[in-house]
Length: 223
Length: 315
Image (cartoon, each protein chain N blue to C red):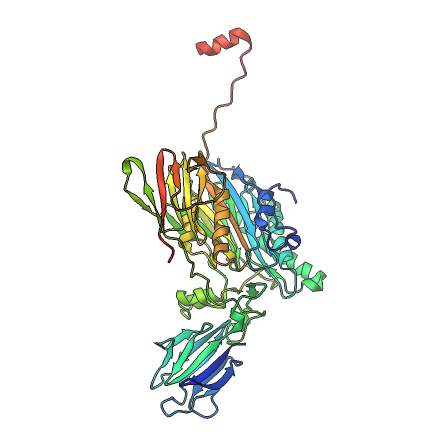
């Protein structure tokens, strides 16, 4: 169950669980979350459940609804978001969004639920967001020999080396570092030795040979 | 149930979660190369297939889940590949996905005298029925269901069919295309303009599927027929892959690693695990090649010295 934890000028005001499919935030009596200040519109904003998501709508309020500092008309709520209305701060807390022991489960959403904002069949909502803040290494391959000085950027998931149908290898950029593998033909050499099959981790300064081409891996200092 | 190309991620429950399931499954299907020949409707001459298929597959537990509920099947000889992602209210997710892939292939083989479209429809209906019947027979399995995505290669055509959010992609001429549209809540929100693609990526409704096998008596797959070209690479995957790995990275794996499908499959799985591996990950990759011109049947081996001499003289 998600909740909103409210503070005003640093003072705790309490918290509200978002239990209904639609909760109105405003100054009027009878709204789900009442913020008593003349600058707050009577019906200022609303949070609606759509599928497994809470969507925040500004209800054409006079002074606006902000999320994490940005004025919004509509916003898909994520764990940790801070909603600001005048000088009220409402932090959106959803512990279920942290992946549990059993991870994400695919669930059946019955079409009959679609018209209403009712929840889907099943239990745990999925984890919040993709964990895509991947920390990836930064490096280049310095080409040795005649082409000396030329550099190949290693800024993509996979970079091909060599020639198809001949000696052909690839460099794989992963959070753990750069890896090299034979794709076809004779295996590439690293520091003079042919590598075993499958991805082998590279270190800064490694000398790589694919066919007749030679490269040196240069890594940027980790930030 | 026939084909030697079967592979179900069996016995996952007994494998401790820290063991990479890949090792346990990788050789069960192996890589298969076969002409995509398939029986045609009666009376119709079988077209000379000018292409061959190369297939590799992986199914991985991921880094969070305790059980692998996905299944896949690769039968390169018959040109049939499929993935399924099981789900359950209580238990039976892996039962549903296995029943789906097994019944699908059985039914396609039994329906060889039907047109591909009718045979595909019948096979999905049979898989749906098999899951419902098993759930009725065993109350503990009530509510189990599964996605199912199929690519059925028949000469120079491929029939694509799916239910749920397992996908079929095609890499062709430098472009990655999705050949299926998810049956998912997020997809319906996107189509209706109710959600932006940026929101879809962080939505917590991502794993809500709107159509599965095992949920209702009537269940129709989406069907598509496409021309197959030499050089095409096809990917079938469960959402454990496409939920975490960007299309650009999928495209890179299919492009750069196409000559080595085993590596392509294991690399896609590694990409998903690097990004959290929050769900089971199953991938099947298929590369289409032009068949090499068959050599003329060798003449009978010439016997003895004079035979050898005749060959030398070109007689």
